Image: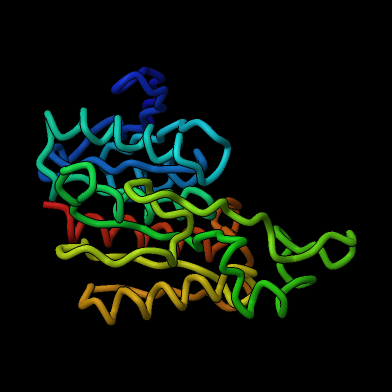
Length: 242
């Protein structure tokens, strides 16, 4: 795996590329938001270039959306929209979803596919945020005294990107979506609700729930479930990116 740090559209990125990319994948690229392990896994298993966007804000925020759009705008100079994928986990999942909802406002085309790895969202916690508290080894606050609902997002003004993955209308032409979560994930509710929302909008949405797994479990590359999940996501991009 080749790793390179640079700036695209004025935004810091880390690019992961297989040493040899198959000819059929040389016109494909995916943008990842959140964690290097996910970006490396998909680049390796999918055999195409993945660009991890090191966005501002440390979580879902308007600066994060702005950075992603800046990188995407530059990539559109070299790639067709249908050849570009977007994906992320937790806060990065929220940014993937809210950025796609925001692209029509920016007069930009939608990408070719999206991977939504258990979107976070304290403003729309859902049932699992409470029932899985104490079972989710990543997010649980049951023994800390902190509330399980997470941070609330400030209301957004007209023209600004949505605050959470469940806000806003699904735009026409929304790309095929791969949704991923686990049965012990405190954000499982958001994943299930987003899947239903996408289906109602006529989107081809592939829901993948792993037994006994917690919030973005695939960050642990030693788990067989992680390899299965990332293999499925990489295959999804290879099927849908043109």
